[in-house]
Length: 159
Image 1: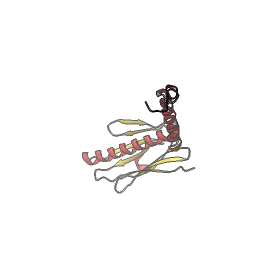
Image 2: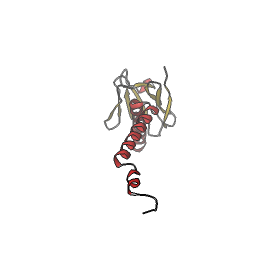
Image 3: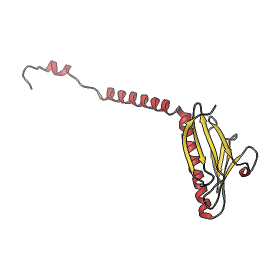
Image 4: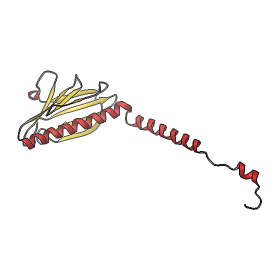
C-alpha cells in the first residue's frame, strides 16, 4: 500500500463496470446501424443494391452460358411484375417497393410488357438497360450490344 492513502479512498476510486461498458457498446452499435441505413438509403437502398448486383450477376451468367454452349440465351425481365428469369429456369424477384424500368430491343421481347436481352455465342447481345429506383437513388445495369458487357453503376434517379 502506498503511503498517504487509506482503505476508504481506495473504495471510492472505482472503474467502469462491465454492465456500463456493454451499455455503451450497444448504444454505439445502434447509432452506427442507423447512420449506415441513412447513408445507404435505408432498407430499400440495401434491397435495391442487392437486387441490382444479383440481376447483373445473372446477366453475366446468361452471357457466359451463351458463349460456352454456342447457343443464344435470353434474360427476361417483367418490370410490372417485379420478376426476372435467367436461363435454366432461374427466377428472381425484385422488391415491390422499388421502381423498375427496362429499355431494350423490341425484337427480344417475348410478350408485351416483358423485356428481354438476348446474348449470342460470340459474346454480343441485343443490349439493354435495367434501372432500379428507390426515392432519389437508383442503380442501373447497362448491357452493351456489341460486346455484351454488363456494367453496374449507381446513378441519380430519373423523375
